[in-house]
Image 1: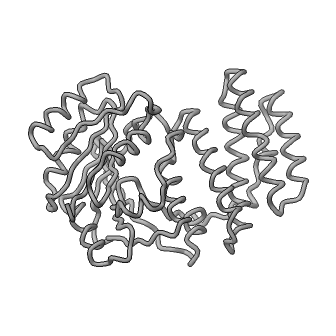
Image 2: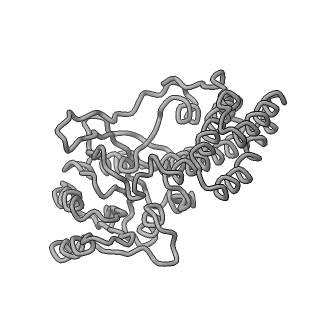
Image 3: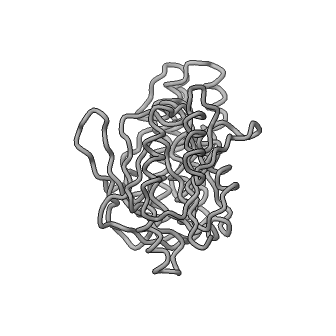
Amino acid sequence: MDNLISIIIPTYNRADLLYETLESFIGQTHENWECLIVDDGSTDTTVEVIKNYTVKDKRFKLLSRPPNRQKGANACRNYGFEQSSGVFINWFDSDDIAAPEFLEQKLQLLKKHPEIDMAACYGERFYDDGRENTYMKPVDNKTDNEIENYILHDFCFYTNSPLWRKSKLIESAEVFDEEMHRSQEKDFHFRMLLKGFKYTRFIDKPLFFKRGDNESISTNAGTSIKAKLSVFRLREKQFDLINATDNPSKNKLLEYLFYRQAVNYYDVMVALDNVADKKAFREKCFPQLISMVKQTHLDNKFEKKLLLGDLLLRIFKKGYKFFYFPQFDHRSF
């Protein structure tokens, strides 16, 4: 039990790909693991594939998302975490592949550095059409402000990357937001960063391989309205959490989040065709945009610009320039 790692994999209709993921864990150099595969209501033969693996190797366990939990990968991730027995936790996606040393190298870092809470690694994106793999290597920190690095300088952790001490996750009381359909890992890791977790990275070589050009468990989440709403929710949460801190880059961070939120609001309003959906979104999200202005150092000319833009948007489906504030795009990438 001392070194037991719980691998948690949410899955939905992955019968054609899941076996590659599971075989990559059978081939791990660190053998003391359990793999909890949480099915999200698959309608193909995914469950049969998983059952075959539970017979083949008792370290695999089939779980099903409880009917009282919201459908989606995040509820599956959280449920798997609740059912896990390991002292270390690694979430993983059901169409990706782990290198043989994926678990061992990160576990060695955690054992070597008892003061850290998480060990991360980097990966490569691969393509089934034969295109050359692309690196997913983390960028170097641009500043000594980790929150600024995360928001403005492309600092991130992919879902597969971290191996966590379970004790830290329990202590922090942070889990995946089950209302989100996109950017859930950005949200989760941001909240953990705010709580000051300590980490290190294994950067000698890629330890996982992420499949490119494949639909997520949320089915085309990148282009769906739900995805855009999730991004809106992410930035709303980031804004509120940063606003409650005394971070030295606070004003710059809030400006940037306002800039991105305003553009996203325009995009969602243009994309929504259903009148009732558009009305509900506006009533919930436009006051939040106005509130962003009121809570920051920005003067009321920005509020007036938003009000005029919203009027044009509702009547003519136009007015992008009233939601576009490029002077606040403080990114370095």
